Image 1 (cartoon, rainbow, N blue to C red):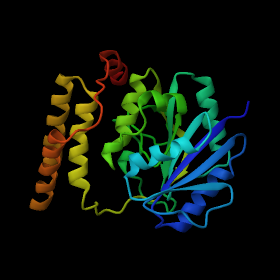
Image 2 (tube, rainbow, N blue to C red):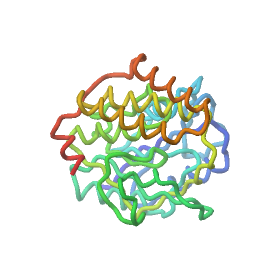
Image 3 (cartoon, one colour):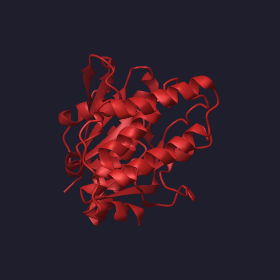
Image 4 (tube, helix red, strand yellow):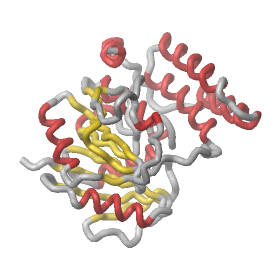
Length: 280
């Protein structure tokens, strides 16, 4: 049976050429069936390739909720989530990933290696493991970079989807943790390549706020209490040590405070067995 993929491409309409390139890289895949929906986050997608459908969201609901919105509109055993400036390099990428899923029934998600098309240095977070090492080396991981990732639909549903309240930042950690807790594994496939521009050196204005708020929410949603307290404390020390301005410090503190004050969504603490499997 041919593998079937439901592809959700998220866009705000700011990169039409990149969007077209990414959608074309999916539609050109061989050895499987693809069903593509382009989710316009606060935008009505126009000028799409004929085989891709549009889903317009009235407002920008954030990356996590935007991806979730596209899932009911595509068919397929596997779900491919793609940012509008990402694309697949080889036309058999999805076929090779499907073979990984077939060979390992407990595999829940696969993130390919990500490369900058202009040859710029890739950021560390594109390889979500403690020691990056050889970027072409495959391994199990406990987080995913969200811009290009394939998830078994059954695992996605059992994990509860992307954490919609997060809006942006750390949603790939939350999803991976919950996939592990559902009894699956998460894999980094270094031999399958996706393209994505390396981010500029300057961070978004909202980086410190959302990153710190969501770091607290990760702990509140997913970790047993002793680990939650340690996780928040360690990351607070680590992030404050790298602050460069008073404004950044204010935004970070505001994020941590809101992380404790505002609801993070449903709390489903990881089982200690899952924590041990992830630690290994």
